[in-house]
Image (cartoon, helix red, strand yellow):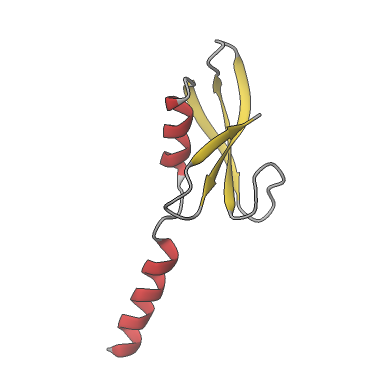
Length: 86
């Protein structure tokens, strides 16, 4: 019982505050992107984002009305939001 509770606590601690596809999609839509799709994501092999951020590759219609691609960088803690990088 104690081992199970410890494992559940560890899993919960590792997943609280982690970014996900919805965070990236919401950030892009809030910045004016339309028809946004995530085409990939990377935490370890991401040269666009800063350390501790997960990058989500997006494609869609940018705020200028043109089809474009970009990377949405989201922090893995609850204090850091998402930023779109071109």
